[in-house]
Image (cartoon, rainbow, N blue to C red; front, side, top):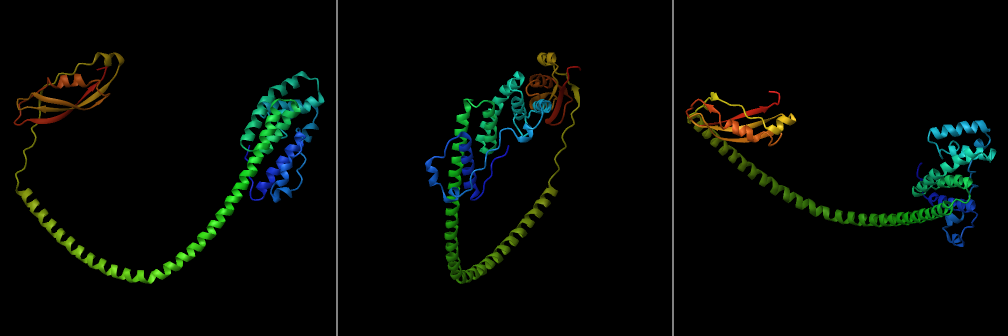
Length: 334
């Protein structure tokens, strides 16, 4: 279902026509206050005669055709829409032809709440034409349905709200146009003022440009001096680096004893696997002097056992203490 889109004067006329149509359907006269409506609304053409709840095409069908189409509409969930091809209209036409048929009456009773909800939703969406069509179906099913007065009142109030909102939008558009006209006058005045100031600005710009060029020349000379100084420092640093002794290579670690870590009982029972990356400090005697966890997955599950294991590791003696990294993997099937 789509919203009603209204533009310009039509936005004032269309809600008024629907209001008149609603009054005609409910048997009420328009209040006297409607005489004070805007001129566009007062001179609008008379409201069209409301369409019948059940289309003439549906009314002309025979009983068997109506039964088949009603059943198909229910299967396709076309309970009340689209107009002219829905279960409500087919069953209403069947009731006209078979007024004592209990199955038809029961179907209409079952369909009425869905149609009522759809009518309320159409009012909320301001789709008043669709709401009036659905109300006509409800009224034909049961002219004394308790929800009818409220629905009709909601449509009337909604249409009045649309008219008021449209009038407010029209007034706002007029004010916006007046403001734009004032802005245009102000822009023209500012343009004249800017033209008067342009000559002085050009003279000032010429002086500023001359000063900028002079500053740029000075900055360029300063940067060139800094570049040459940096080049000299870089050359001196390269020479000093070439003369400096090369650092000794890190000693090679040769493992003597690397007992495997104990598998945590909880992790073993749950079948959890993972790994731990450690940083190990090795002294000159080949023993591990320190160890810390750099990364573990899952976190903290295997950390303690991994640390306990590597602290018992032993390597061949080395010339200088060193630091290395080792990854311990934990697999429950190993």
